[in-house]
Length: 169
Image (cartoon, rainbow, N blue to C red; front, side):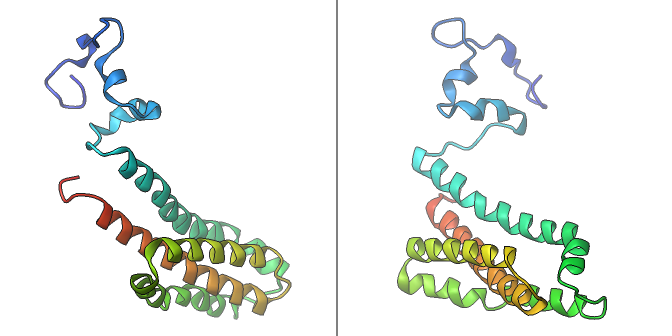
């Protein structure tokens, strides 16, 4: 049985008789290795591309927060941030997510694709500015705007996924 499936898949054969049907069923080569997660939804090639590219926004939004949490001691030491100032700095950085909804609403007027490209570009720029930050103010401002553009990217990509996919997928 395959993860609770009563049908034995080990005996399934493709048209040629040698290859398993799952190898022919999924045209995306790496997808057959993820079958442990269950059968993927029937998506078009365009939907798979949109899903794959926009999933990166979700990855980076989590990665950015986790990386900051892991490196906070090194950041604090290298920028001479006191223990008293650290919670204030972190709060200001996280408040960057609040105005992100304004950029998300602007995507309705400007267009999702240009706004998504803008947010990705600006997040990348803010990350580069964070890398060269030399004091607490530079670090906080670049991280604030990085968080703003990252959250706007995340929200716009979620809207794009919802619009792109059918309700049943």
